[in-house]
Image (cartoon, rainbow, N blue to C red):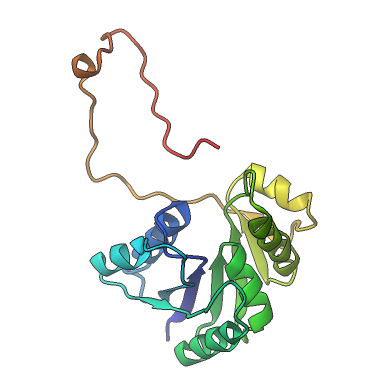
Length: 200
């Protein structure tokens, strides 16, 4: 029997967490010993990138319904979803997902990945961040995706051996593009650097 893992993400928006979870799900498609499913909490915008991209790779995403920012029924819905899928591990991503997992008290093991800290958050988001840090202390394990995140977690009381550094994996690119220097006005002898990520 396969080890069943449910990845629960904070929202279905386009971003690093969505990309990471889809990459993980894709990587395990060939592994008969591990079965990966994806679930998501609803977002506030129309962005449903996670659902669209998952469908393209032949995977469905289950929405764990939630009305408003504080809906106590979400705990029961998540528990019921985990029991019906007979998951051995719940793997959460995002602040709301961590808080909800903590209060849902899943019967399976709970792992949380911390992808980073908030930069200049609004008050409501800062509250979710504080609640999630408290919740993470109850997780079976916490993953920090970089040394910076590990230091940030440690400064807030989430430390090894519970917290471990696991860097995000990346898929091998299918196509390697080159840039047209002349089109961009770049001299042939100039060094070109590419930064891929969010500057905040």
